[in-house]
Length: 85
Image (cartoon, rainbow, N blue to C red; front, side, top):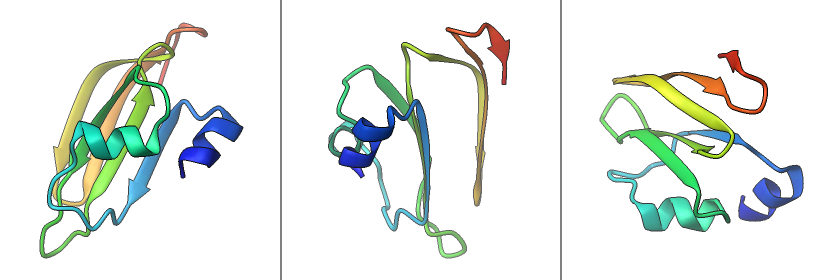
């Protein structure tokens, strides 16, 4: 995953079925080369296998986030384009 993030210059990555009870900076750093990232996760539950979204804070600015069982919602602005997402 990390190599793919580097090669494709990924700015936002969402992973379905992380199979993780908890996501921490160490895990996100293994996936994301640049330290300038932020993340939000929806942990593993009996109905959901865990979700994770990671983004480059230099490029995407979060304005609102909401997390529920089986979903993550992010609202923000691409800094380089100035467009609301």
